Length: 455
Image (cartoon, one colour):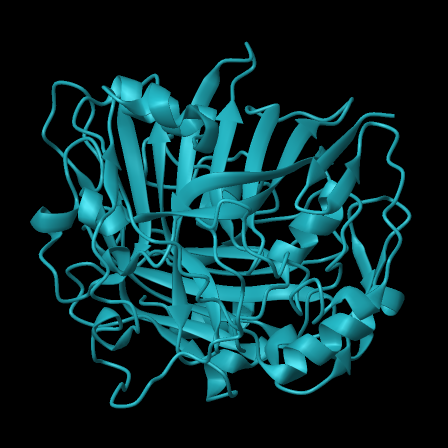
């Protein structure tokens, strides 16, 4: 059996042999969420400390970067097409393709700051999960866990690692008063798609304390959004829920031209999102969304990679869109890279299932379980799409999160930038306590969608 030695951990090869689960590692040799506590041998990745991000003077509505401990860090070096071969050992295939294809694309590299903390109650629940969390017999659904917490801090399968990404602590909700989805023009055109929206997420598993998954319900999240612009999308609205143990998610869509709500059972997986010229699939949302059932998931190993980290520029609600969103890529100042260890998870479409991207690779930050990079391959096996998730420390939750992300369609030379507040005038808000109707399941029903939508 081939083994990959990485920072004292070993991962089994195709045989799937399991690493012994030992909760005593958490908080000693491993962080409370299962990352290697020690730094790298060369010192470029420092040891992890549970640094509580100081929020003295910060309040929602003030720029987050201005209150970050390391806001004055300077770039150490820059990678571009001319010198990328010198840094190939810390780049992914997707990053190298972007650098090669896009002459203006560059990666400014900063000192590594392991700024993702964890609240005590999340750490305690994660420790309990070493013995209590269980996947379903199907290999992809979640059947038991203590929440809020990481279910599998010592993962032995790719599906477990992806479930950790889904259950990272984000509070009970996320609120966008003003958000944007942008799609760059086709070749030869200057016409952007810029969709403005209002959106809410509700995470039933995010309530402070310690609860069994069976007690709070097996819902990963509820979401609602309504488009404000452009005119072709304005008034359209959606309410949906995503489950941990079922592919039959409830998705309802309001069409103002018809003045009715329709249930969309097929609006999932690789279905194109409405209004974006086939550039944006449903399960590409926020790096990956939806159930895991169409793919076989495999942990390839761990790797030190330059990833978007502490990338506050992608959330700068006071910035001008023109200063951040370029014709072929986001401005380098918004992307900001650091060297971190990531779990590499490979997804291969199951025999008998279908997907327009039959192979995918996800890179999960070891400290926070956020997906920070992803690559999709087409049916011919060629690299097709590259996603970057812009991770930031979240002062409200004491953890880190990825909301804003970009996706580059290599053959067509277009990209999507979503969940950004750049140019919006208002910041995204993470909620740690239930507040109002939008942190209740009853808000996300077809009946309520019909009642609150324009007629």
